[in-house]
Each structure stands twice: as C-alpha cells, then as structure tokens.
Length: 109
Length: 297
Image 1: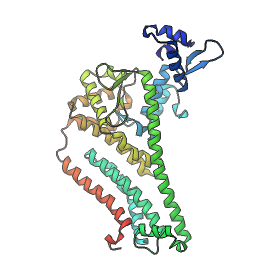
Image 2: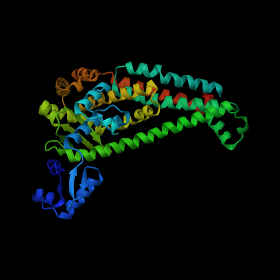
Image 3: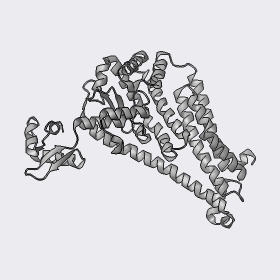
Image 4: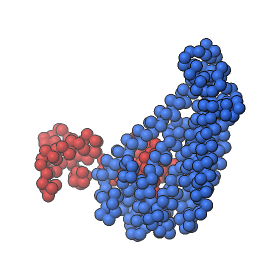
C-alpha cells in the first residue's frame, strides 16, 4: 500500500511487483492482494488501459486524518468502540479538529 | 396494580433526572461510581417498562407476570380499556427500542472497530519495543486502544506522542491503555452508548455516557498504578496537555490530581457500600414487578 501511495499516477500489478522485488512475490499474489484492496475500497482500478493501473483512493494523510477524527469524535456509538487516552473532547474541539484536518468526515459516516 | 404502576413511574422519574444529576456531581471512587451508574441505568429502564406494563394490565391481578400471563391466555383480554392498550403498546415499543439499540450499538461498535483496525494495519507499524502496540505517523499527540476480544487488542501511539514523551512516560501511557484493554472498559460503555442512542433527548443518558467515559479513564489510571509509577503517568498527562489543546480539559486536571495522591484508603468500604446500594436499586423495581406482596401492596 505504501508503494501505491508513493506513485500518484498509479501503477500496474507488474510494476508493483518490480517495486517490491526484494520480497520476491509471484505476480498472482500481487494480483490477489490488489483485488482485495480494491474490494475494501483502498484502491481503484483504471480499466481503460492495459495492463490495468491501480490508484490509491485516498492519500495516506487522509486515512490518518480519518482515523484520528474517528478516535476523537464524541458520537456515542464511536465512544463505545474506542477508549481514548486523554481528555473528554467537546463538540467544539471535534469541530476545530475537523477544520484543522480540512475535511468534514461526519458527512461521510 | 395501579399503585405499583405509580410507584414504578415515580422511581423511573427519580432515576431519569435527580439521581443521575446527583451521581454526576459525586466525586469518589471510580469503580463505585461505575457500579452505581450501571445500577441506575438498569433500574431506570426496568422501572420505566414496569410502570407502563403495570398501567396496561392494571385491574385483575396481584403481580405483573400473572397479569401478563392472564392477558396472553386471553382471560382479561376483554377487560383491557383503550388506555391500557396504549400503555401496553408504549411498554412493548420501549422494550423493543432499548433491546434494539443495545444490539445495534454492539454491532456498529464492532463494525467500526474492524474497519478502523483494517485501515490502521495499512497505516501503522508494529512497535519494536512494546508488545501489541502499533505506531502511527501523525503529529497529533494521541494514544488510544482498539479492543479485540478478551485480553487482546492493540495500543496505538502516534509519533507525535512518542516525540513529546520520554521512554518512562510512554511505558506509563501504554500501561494505562493496557488497563483499558485488560479490564474490558469498552464493554462498560456499551450499555450507556445504547441508552443514549435509544433516548437521546433524555439528559440522563447523556450524563451517564459522559460520566462513564470519564470514569473509565480514572479506573485505567488506578489500574496502571500496579505496573508504573503514578507520578510518571501524571507527568505524561501534563506533557500531553502542554503540547496539545485537545488534552487540556477538566478530566486531565482531575487525573493529574488523582495520580499525584495515593489511592484513597476508604475505597474498599465505599465500594462495598456502593454495591449494596446498587443491589437495592435493582431489587426495588424487580420486587415491585414480580412480587408486590413483599411491599404489602
């Protein structure tokens, strides 16, 4: 996944295998992993060209921001999931955090 | 039965407003408080449902189960007035809503957790120094934990936190997170998250949820004392608050104060007393519903 995040313009399964050459993966393994990542919504496949190119759906930073917002948000069902370390975060804090992160994740969930 | 219904209704009202408000102001042993909150939540729900049921099957029977049994057999079917039908529907809706929300909260908590875990595994590296701990690259100063079944789960530290704290403080923070995981604090919160979801406009459910969320932090601090020096954990909380505004809250102040003092020596008798009060709180509506004769009604 790190390799895909680095390549903004996407890369094919064979290219990804080259990047990860030190792990000596079979091409089918790379394909399996990529289609699993696609099913889970982490990558999209560009089918207009052959071989298909895989692109990251969100940047690494966006994913981190999503996790942090989820962890810090005060919505009751989320509180049930995660025990926070410090501080009860108020709604104002969450809003400030969201604007800092530049995205409104509540709209997605 | 109308007397039983009235008493249960008064009890439900007391447990919905004055008692939670008083309990939220109480500052004592966190374990005792959590026990009392659980009892207030259960007893309140029981009283509310019991009151509606008692009004519904008002005439004809000495105890609620017998009244319901008679109703199911169709014996007092004809006697049910319109008012009684309304109460019966209210009772059934309440039961359905509370149980439904409990199941929903449990399910959605699990789903969110699994999804979070999945993304986390792509974004973070396992820590080389600490077992069952992952490191996520972000400037936010955070440490949290992701429960996963009994005695399992992952503690997560941010690189921001690692930079902000020294090694001893990090170990203390991890001990705090492990306490959350080992003592299943996530399970303690679920009923309150569910009650709040079921009755969001009821201030008691919000107060209860907030209180329990606050109390599990204090409990984790107390339980971490067995593994690390509380002074170091207090320093960690202070350092995090100094850097990150999210951590500057009343709770942080309270945690630093508690960690700087030895544990209250009276906590064991206080705990026993709270368990007694909690049992009483549960017993009163239960007896009223199942054996009103015990109260001479």
